[in-house]
Length: 363
Image: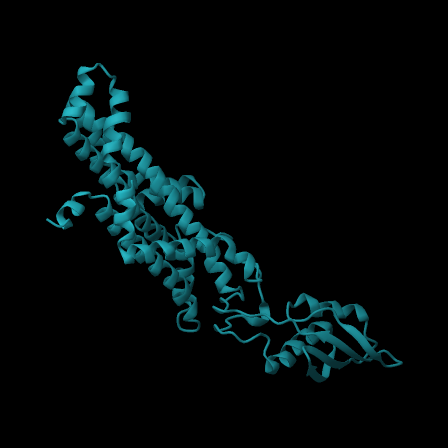
């Protein structure tokens, strides 16, 4: 174990990839609570806001926002003065203004509760003070006015969960199935592997569409669909490893001692396949994430109000001309995460090969 850890951290790229993946996982886990925005919250006055560090609303957009609200309040904005984050607004109307209409201001998410500073005797003119609420959108907003950074981090939770859970299911089924088939051999092996061949022949997208006919699209369906297919490669790989291991002396010795087949599989066969299986599982995680992204891009994956990187990329592709940042942000998260997972998988493959120490040791 110490040798494995030493060989793994000898790779600078593996260390960087592992640290980056930990940072992404931590950001997706706690980041949405730190952005100051709810992932489903809509800012109607800030639709399609480009990325930046500046606070919104900008000084030049405060009066247009107040005029839109004034139309709903059935009043007219006569003067607006902004000072120290507070807007002093003068409004009038043909008839007496009911102060209750001022509740429209805090509903906009741009302004706080209004305070009446002055009121005409006939009630047709009001001077109010209203705080301007500053909002920052580091990655901009989408076509509905939702914070893209928060939604990207929440989508990362879904994509990473799908990648890890579906890989775990594929690992469990494929490891068990392949080990049993390889150790049993003969007709049992032939029948089990012909079933694998039949499942290989089934088009994956057609399989997902058939599931959608009977079940509602969602996260659970995606996990079932991906887990039902991705274990096939794992089963074939474990079977090949088991066919090689069953001829080894320690397996024959265990059989001569009268150990049961189940005990031989658990204590001797499966532990000796974990090296290549671990590498394959590391490579399978980005494959599953990419597959889920493909399904979400086609509209067959995660459905609203849930989202994933693939779903956000699909939304960004539809708005690429008017809001290119909607595509760039989730795509950057997806590509860098997949790259880090592949780099880590390559490093694990080298670290799990003890012969590399023998080849590089001084003579």
